[in-house]
Image (cartoon, rainbow, N blue to C red; front, side):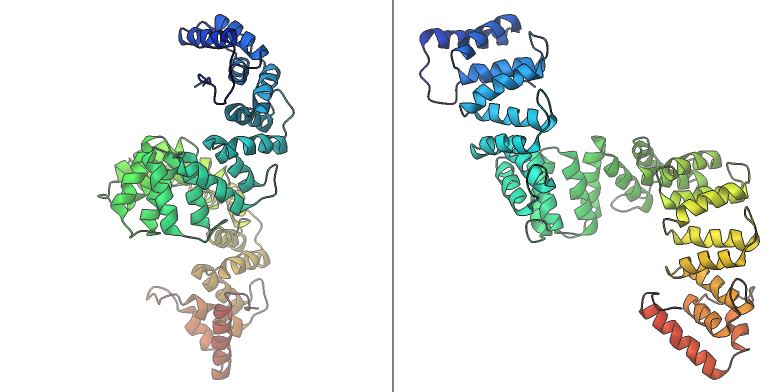
Length: 447
């Protein structure tokens, strides 16, 4: 909404003619007679009225009664700003910040916002805080950002309240304080700011700054989700899927996942794929599962890329294609997705979609094993046991099998038992010692 200055905010003695022109302009604006307002305010502006200069700048800025002309707007804003009018200083800062009518210049934007902010203009205080927060036009300074956010927040500016909450949440410019973050999120959330409502839901869900309360989390997620906040829609779907704070309801989970997924949220697209694959809340539909998996996968989500690969392996929703499976596994494996690294190792081990290559299989299995993936650890152990891709080494074989600690299966040969039958007691003890060192070092000392 365009805002015009109706009453001058400074002590200036208007002449009767100047005051008359200004007031006539106000009356013209009220009846949407922009041509008359423009003429009257131009007359007052040329006589030095800062309020008229500001209003004239607004008309050129918005293209009201005149062709939109940012350069002309800047000219009139500048004249009013130089007289100390806070609104004009704020708008002039915006013009420099956006590069409208002037070359973009964050330093100049900051200069004008600073002048307006010092007069108590909440939006200027907020914009100034943003620049200190991001280090644009000024050296990055979280403490200074907090100072200006606080001033605007105390005036009830909801975006400043939200950003101030984030500073307390992250501990940037202030000591980390979840309770204080909670307080400012609540103030912004109660004013209807969707991002604050979403974050408030997160804090209730995680029990940060408040006792964990899934029902309250759902309440705030719902408010944000109803405003179209994709993250809140996703989290609300998650709550319905898991029955947290609400009765478990797969159909409702699907509904909220769909809303978030259609906004491009990769997590929602992936989870929607899972629902279609498993037939949860919807009829089972592998093609639809693949479609949603691929949307998330194309955004670079490793978990979705792995699942696309699995669908190609099984020929579900797509024609079976091992080469295409390998392609998707590789994309995810390069992002350190352990499941994909293991799957890629299997493809090389069995020669599916690629030439059989035990060395390459071992490389990928080992990468997954060092991330704690038990199936990969078992595979590495068995490959050391038979000398596939590496020199046969019973000690290392036992070490990895010991780490994997796969429960015994009466329908499956116990590989560790077979390996142990070929080792001395001293070798077994050595392997166990190596396994403990490997695990205690978080897999840094396993070679």
